Image 1 (cartoon, rainbow, N blue to C red):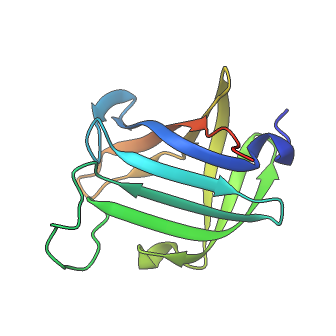
Image 2: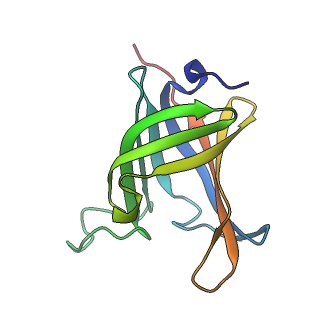
Amino acid sequence: MTQISDLIGTWELKDWRVYADGEFHKFPMGEDAKGLLIYTREGMMNGFLMRNDYSQNTPRTPARSEICLSYAGTYRLEGENVIHDVSLSTIPEWIGGPLVRSIEWKGDDLLLKTDPQIAANGKGYSNALLWGRVPMKY
């Protein structure tokens, strides 16, 4: 059973895949996407994801979820789910709502999966994000 203490710390994205109707579909921000996920002892969390090729040379346009996204808020555990209660986000629809992620452990790595959702084309999809713990420096 996952405990809060298992999550506390900083996690670096290792892999992010989208599955459509149970089959691998795509890497939403490329095979080399970057990301950080932070859980604090105070119950706060922050997630940031971006394409690897996103740089300072990118034209100044509003952030689009295809190239980078970020959200923050509080978190809590319910069974083997972590619930992110979002207070800040680059995706306005997420603000004020819970994002439910199921937890699976792959050795020391943390696999978070979204609940199945229905895309605009009527097909079902879900996300699977694999995170590796960043070692403490101090």
